[in-house]
Length: 253
Picture (tube, rainbow, N blue to C red):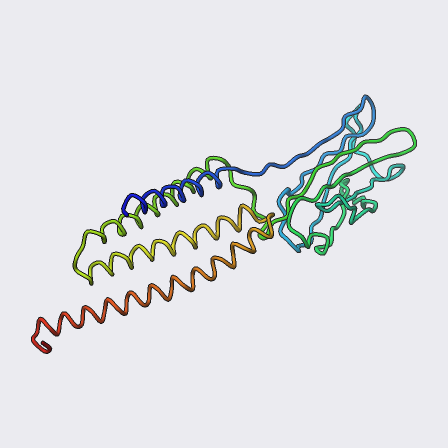
């Protein structure tokens, strides 16, 4: 029985650790021509769901690096959803401080996931283009790095080992009160693990809407069950402790 419990805990913890190590990456493509325009942007690649965003960029002449205005040039911005459908297509605005920009309404970011975008600046003789994508998550958090994933995985694994320690320790204890207390500690650590992983999954896998939603429902049910189980164990342990105390005092036979 002990070997089965230990094997299950180790397998589950390693699975979580490996899943959290993997991160997502973002892409940005700029197109250089022998003559034309260079578009320089500073995008916030990770955006918060249903939040307005202003995309800005500068436009330079490729041959001499001079900033260009809208006197003879127009720049067009497009945004596509995760299925490739274009949901926004309009001209960018030129501002007096020499930058270009466009205000993107929050309703364009109603879904979680990757949104491709592009900028094209043209006049009669020359042009320039750039493309990339925004990653829209629930809180606008960046994907965790590999090092962060390893640290998170190790921490979850360590918490699981502590919970396993209390479970294994309870198997060799005959005193029912102490056994219940040990199992209660194990249940508490299990609740900590589930709360911890729920936060990590929501922050790192925010683009996977169905997964997060399904896991969130599972966590809610498990938290409720574990809360009831923990309270039951505490009450039961208290009643047993009270009974043993009365027996020791000779109040009951």
